[in-house]
Length: 415
Image (cartoon, rainbow, N blue to C red; front, side, top):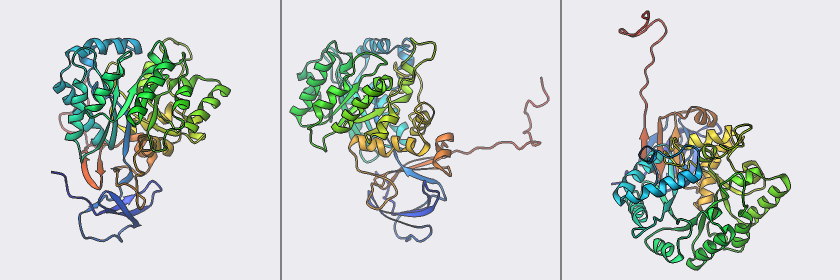
């Protein structure tokens, strides 16, 4: 049973530093009021000065692969090796195993402040291609009311259209793929775009995930430029943009902006996977965030893989991703949080959220006094609100001995 909706968030600290009361009307924000002036009818949640931020959104997850690193023991730092090791492992995957690991990954994202997830779902080779599809459709139903979950078909290179369409018929939302890995990458982009057009649905492609090689995003942009404005079109990774010279980058970014493609930066996985062949002056494996943002592109960022062959680490935490955007993407604190919250929601085609009248009531309240402090320290004490309901709470009880008051039994004076 879902918790009761909250009617008032009292004493919320906004990103501006001001204390406010935020009145909710079910799943939307009704008003933002001076602190202490909100009514007392209905469910009131006193945040006691906690920082209230737009909830995180994860625009590019692989929930079906999560937590397989230890079982697979893949080669370190090798994209092709990661793909091959997972393909070898997936024969032994069962629907129940995929569901259990995906549930664990989704709930960790939720507990950390993420209330919307888009997950790519591998279509598996062989005579049982839909084990992951069926597991993820079950998970979406199971988590309904706790978070929003979008599902993308991710076929292996060379999979036929009929199998992809059968996966969509089983409940997936978007066409996906990784055409930059195909021997004919542009042809595969056009094939997948045509498939999405036939279905009248959106598309989310892994795009140009390498430091060299083809630049397919311009062809992708041209293919979807005349799509209806409300049809989702997304380019994940787009690492190649970060390596282009100024003139070529400007042309590519202009094409992206004109097409309405949303670009998703994925710093943790691409920083891990890219650049191993460059032991000196190792290039950043990250898309051209600054150029895209300054040009007015739709840009979000996500945590991507979590402890699978493509990334041995990851905390499923939007504050971790935001910190990497500051350190590796050279973005500001507030704009880094925007990319993992509002920007990610725009990429996903979700309504605007946050502490503003009429916005969706999607929040994370965290024990911090500013956005910078929240990103720097990522305090674990958090309250997560989805559609106006508290769906997760985490608290920390921490005790530290004062100088001169070392607890009995300590090792002080020994050794």
